[in-house]
Image (cartoon, rainbow, N blue to C red; front, side, top):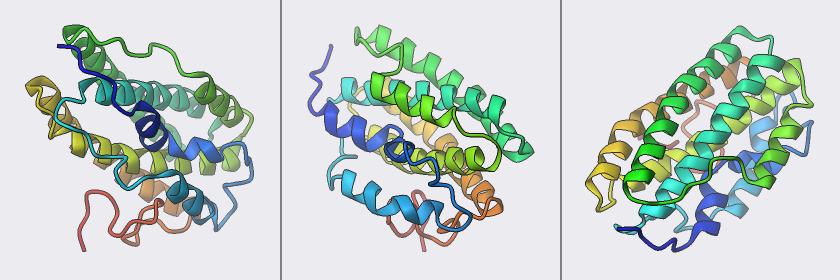
Length: 217
C-alpha cells in the first residue's frame, strides 16, 4: 500500500548530498580545512530527528534513496572526467557500480509498492552538480571526496533507520545495503587523508558526530 510522504523536505535536505549545499564555494577543498569548513553548516542544516523513519515511511525512504543514488552516479561520472587521481577515479567507478545496482533495486521496490520516485535530479541538485563540474584536478578531488564523506555519513543514517521499516522488502534492502554504504564512507575517509582533508579517520565525522557513522569508540 502506498504510504504518505510525511516529511520529505527534512529528509531530502538531511540525507541527500548534504555537502552540495557548500559546492558553490569552489575553494572549499583547501589543503587542510575542507572538512572542517563545512562542518558547522552541515550541523546547522541537520535536525535531531531527520534520520528517524516511522515504520510506514516507505515513500520517504525510497524518495531519499532514489535521489541520493542518482546524485552519486552523476557525481561519479563527473569524477571520471575531471579527476586525474587514480584512487579518486577508482572510487568513482565503485560508486557507479554499487549505486547503479542499488538504483535499480530502488526502482524495482518502488514499482512493487506503486510509489513514484524521481528519475532525474531535482533542480537544486543539478545546479550543485554543474558547480562540481567546473572544478578540475586537486580542487575537484577535494570537493568530490568532501561531498562523498558528507553524503555517506547521512546515508548511513538513512539506511540504518530503513532497517526499522515495517515493509519486509525495504527492510531487507536497507539491511543488505547498509554495509556497502558504510564501506564507501570508510574508503572516502582513506582517500580524504591522502588529499590533506582534515577531520578524517579520527573518530569524528564531518557532521560533527563522534564516533563516525557505524563506528564505536
